Image 1 (tube, rainbow, N blue to C red):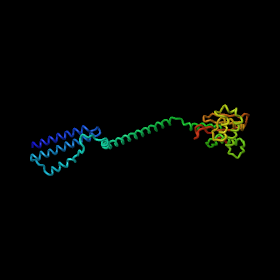
Image 2: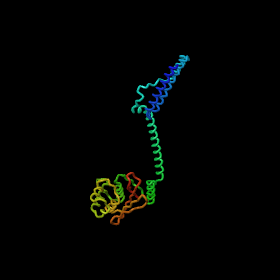
Image 3: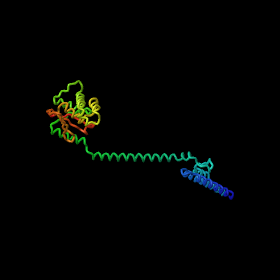
Image 4: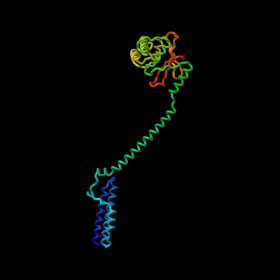
Amino acid sequence: MEELQRRHRLEQKDLQARVTQKKKNASKKTRKGVNEECEEMERQLKARQGLELAALDGNTVSNTEEEEVICEQPMQIRDPEPTNVPISNEQETSSDKPQERTKKKNRQRERLARRAAEQEQAAANAAIESSEQVDYRAKEREIIDKELNARRLIEKEVRSDGHCLYAAMADQLKQNDIVIDSNLPDYKVVRQDAASFIAEHPDDFAPFLEEAVDEYVIKVRDTAEWGGQVELLALARVYGITINVLQGDGRVETVEPENTSNKVAWLAYYRHSFGLGEHYNSLRVKP
């Protein structure tokens, strides 16, 4: 008995030294696993020594009881490396990978949820802002329709393609029995007539231009450059016709030719109602 107890004390002392060394060499990441391993080693030693003491005292354990004790013990964890060798970074990383993946998944889920919440808030803010804004297109349409009814005019819509001013004026020339005699499309003829008049009277138009007259004339004649006030003035003089332009706010701007004329053209000018932006339509008198 004394010899067995002495051996048990030596085994406990040796185990305590091994446990102390393992815990000392454990890193922050591996500390939990090392603690569990040490507890298992202490439990196994205590169980084995208990069986040895019982056998020495004559309190033998039956085969069934011994099997139950053994079955309760998990497989003993071997310690293949010296206790003073620290665990490598690769081992630490390997043991922690499941936890890191879980954390990454959780963080990704949080980011997705946060992003979805931000998008919902942005959509709500946009809806509020949109509801508070003025519908300029609807307002412009309402005003022009009101003026058309008051002036007994109907609208002849032309394509919104950059040539709208010239196409609308071509329609107005026909309404005033002004013949366009050419094999070219009517709007191209009107473009060429406006460009030629500006080129022939550079001093009248140069103050209104931000580029050389020659360069401007090429744009008017050969491109789909939008027409505006300069071109309206040129066309009024070319064809000797008064041009009335109904604005989206209800105003009417009039461009007079050099000489008094009984010929009158009516155009509607839009800022908001068409996809390309500014647009002209032809207006005809109701029959």
